[in-house]
Length: 424
Ligand SMILES: *Cc1c(COP(=O)(O)O)cnc(C)c1O
Picture 1 (tube, rainbow, N blue to C red):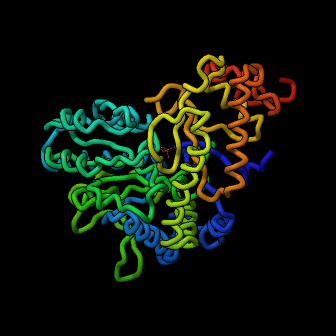
Picture 2 (picture 1 turned 180 degrees about the horizontal axis):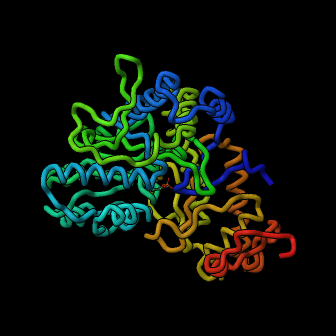
Picture 3 (picture 1 turned 30 degrees about the horizontal axis):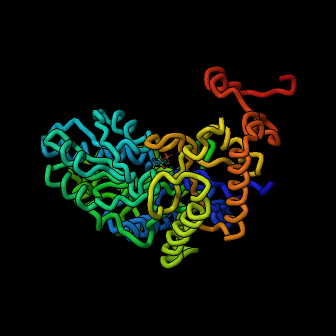
C-alpha cells in the first residue's frame, strides 16, 4: 500500500497535489501563524505584503488587473464573481436574470448562480465533449447576465471556441465567467485575461497545492477584468503612505459587492500558495502545466486499448473514460472503483462529469514519476483483464483489503453515524 502522503491519488477534477512540507513550515512560522486579524496594521505589515505579493502573482499569471483574495473555496469564488457581475449590471440599471452553463458544468456552477438569484439555462455539449457554440449563441440574449464555462473543461478538454464564446457574450452586453478549477493545466502557458474572461476563480487548493479534502479549508480567489474590477468585494490591500493598508473604499469604487467573509479569507492557504509559486518560479509553474498534461496523456494512451476513452484526441490534465468497456461483464463503474482500493489506490472520480455514462475521470498529479504512473496503469490493466475474464466477485464485494468493506451508501447518506464507538 502506498503511503497516503506520497501515493498517486487519481481523483479527477479535484487536482490532488503534492503538498510540500515547506509550505506547511512557512504557514506555521510564528510571525504568520500566531497573528490575529484585529491586530494593529502596523504590526502585520509582513502579512499584508504577503497578500499583496500573492495578488501580484495571481494577476500576472492570469493577465487580469484585479483579484479578490477573500473567497474561501471555488464555489465561494463563483458566488463572488457572480455578485460582482450583478453589481455591475445593477449599476447599468439592467436586471438580467439568466446564466448559461454547459451540461458538463460542475454542480457548483448552477448552485452558485441560483444562490445569487439567477435562473440557469443548460447548454448542450457536443459529441466531441465541448460546449456547443451554435446552441450557446442561440441562447444568448438581452436577458443573459453571463455564461459560465470551465476551461479546460470537466471532460479534460480545452474549449477551443473560448474566444468566440467571449465575443458572443460581450456583444450581447453580458459577462464571461470562467470556472478556473482546472487552471493547473494551463498555468504559465495561457492567460485567461487574453481569452476575454471577466471573472475566474482559482482554487488555491488545486492549482497551487494547498491541502484539501475533509471539507477544507480551501481558498478561491477571484480575478476580475477591467469591467468588473470596480465591483470587487471589500476589503482591499493597498500601499498607502504608512505602508500597507486595508481599505473599505477606493477612488474607483463603483458600488462594490460587499464583503464575502469576516476578515480576509484563508490566510494559511495564501501563505502555502505563495510558497508553492515562489519555490517553483514562473518557469516551474509552466512546467507544472506541461507535466500534468503529459502525465494524463500517458495514462490515456496506455489504457486506451483496454478501457474506452470518451473522446478522441489528446486530453489536458485529466483523462476521461466511460463504462462501455465493462459492457457484459456485470461490473459497474462503482465496482471497478472499489476494486482499485484493493490495489492500494484511492479511486478515480466516478460518475462525473454527467455527460458520459459511468464516467471515470483520472487526474494524475504532475509530480508523479513514470514508475508510479506505470504501476497505476498496471493495476488498471489487471482489473480490466479480471473483469473481462468474468471474475466478478473480485469486484462485487470490493474492497476486501480495506479496513471498512463495501458500505451501504444509501444508508450512510440517510442515517449517517457521525460518532463511532468500539461497541458498534
Ligand atoms: C472543485 C471544483 C469546483 C468547486 O470548487 P470548491 O473549491 O470545491 O468549492 C468547481 N468547479 C470545478 C470544475 C471543480 O473541479
